Each structure stands twice: as structure tokens, then as C-alpha cells.
Length: 320
Ligand code: SAM
Ligand code: SF4
Image (tube, rainbow, N blue to C red; front, side, top):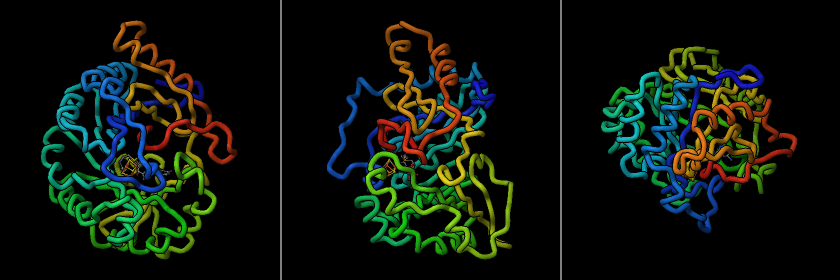
């Protein structure tokens, strides 16, 4: 599918839940969230139907996300059903990794190709502080089981938060010397909770890159999307930088997002949404037609830097 700026859209990110077993301070309000009811959340058959329609229009890659996708029961069955759809070439998941260790085998057997694990600190107390109680050991075990089971690449997403974890950048880079992982530093975005204190905690990837010595450019990371990749000489892993703000990559945007409650978001940072539920549940419209409409609504660029636009949802409700 081409949008009106001639970008090819072949990537669907699917949020399967707005619930989470963590409370990362920049993503979720600590004082509780307003959860969607079960009837508002798409059933797996509905998600599969949307993917089928998407494939007819050129979608070939899907990413399962949330909230925390691994807390939704039956997630492996969803992956298995998506895997059966001819035309799907790549299935990945974004997870906080807490439940991963015990699930990797079944996820892989269901047809999962690769995993992105979010990890903002390598210090147990700080990790717990950032995530509202998360257990770092569980995530590290999840990473290790992914590597043992041969899921490749294993990407580790680190959101850069000035004053919270920017002093750990070198430690994360060091991890690529000992493990074959792709550590990716991601700029904080002024979405949801983060928008309240964004200026205080934002740090650009350029500021981080300037500090790091000895990185050499590489271009061989599967599914590297908007990431600019480097490695240390001889290291088994790589280091990537994703800068949605300082070097916006909208001109290459290839994705649309499906929220857990059945809305297509043409752009992460816009409140524009196309509701698929009337088509799925009442036959009032046609899913393919609505997907085409969503693609046609993709704006040329997000407006995170000029304070215009903005999503009405927090990240846990969009799917990051
Ligand atoms: N729970 C899963 C996880 O944490 O990987 C998947 C959903 S989470 C919303 C997806 C990604 O969005 C995570 O890597 C998280 O760090 C990132 N994220 C959330 N809020 C963000 C923000 N304001 N700026 C940048 N990244 C953010
Ligand atoms: Fe949950 Fe992921 Fe948001 Fe953290 S970033 S609160 S793990 S949805």
C-alpha cells in the first residue's frame, strides 16, 4: 500500500492489550489506569481478520505489542494463527521481558521470528524504580533464553532518560561485547506521562553518541527500521540509535498501528483514528476499505517537536 506521500506501508503494529504487569513511570500513570472492558478489546479472531485484510493490501510484517502482550492469555495461539496467513514474512514482539523466560519456547514454536525487549537499566534497584517494581533478573533470564533458543536478532530497547539512566549508556554498550544483542538507544517522546516533564528528562541520541568512542557503522541488522547501527570492533552485538525527535524518520515511515480496542492509528503522534469495530462487529463497513482510508490519512510528519498534533492516548494504550 502506498500513502499519499508515496511511502510504502507494509508493517502493522498490533497492540493486544492496554494492561501491563509493570508501571514504567514515563509510560503509565502510577495511580492506576482506566482499563478497557473485555468487550471493548478485540478478540483474537478479529485481529487475525484484520491481518488477513492487511496482507491483501501489502502488509507483510507484524509486531505484537501492548500494554504488555505476554500477559494476555493465548498469545501464542494468536501468533500461530497469524503465521498461517500467506504473505506474512515477519512476526516480532515487543515485551518488557518479565514473563519471557518461560514463554520463549512456545512463542518460537508458534512462529515468532524475533523479540524486542525493553530494558532501561542494568541496576536492579533502579530498574525496579523506573518500572514500578520490576525484577531485573527475570528480564535478563528472558534475554538469555531467547539467545539460547536462537531467536535472532534479540533487540534491547533502552529509552534514554536524562538524570535517570544516561549514566548507564557505556554499560549497555559493553553488553554488546559479551552478548550477541542489538542494544538500541531510543529518544524519549513527549507522549503520555512523559509529556509533563519532558524538557527536564529528554536527551538526544547525538549527545550520547558524542560520548561513545570506537563505534563503527554497520548495516546488517535484520528489521532495523529507523535505527542507525554501529558496533565495537570484534563485538558480537550492535548498538543502534533511534531518534524520533532530533532526526525524525517520518519520510520513511512504513507502519500503521492497531490499538487493542480496534482503532487504526495512521501516526503514533496524532489523535486521528479509524475505528474498525463497526466493520468487524456490525458489518457496517469494510475492513479493507477502512485500512486503505487509514493509510491515506498518514500525515507527512509527526508534530512532536513543534507542540502541534499529539495523541490523546498514552503509550501503553497505543503500543509503542
Ligand atoms: N510493554 C511492552 C514493553 O515495554 O516493551 C510493550 C509496550 S511499550 C508501550 C513499547 C515501548 O514503548 C517500550 O520500549 C517503552 O519503553 C516505549 N515507550 C513508552 N513510552 C515512551 C515514551 N514516552 N517515549 C519513548 N518510548 C516510550
Ligand atoms: Fe508496561 Fe511497556 Fe509501558 Fe513499561 S513501557 S509500563 S512495560 S507498557
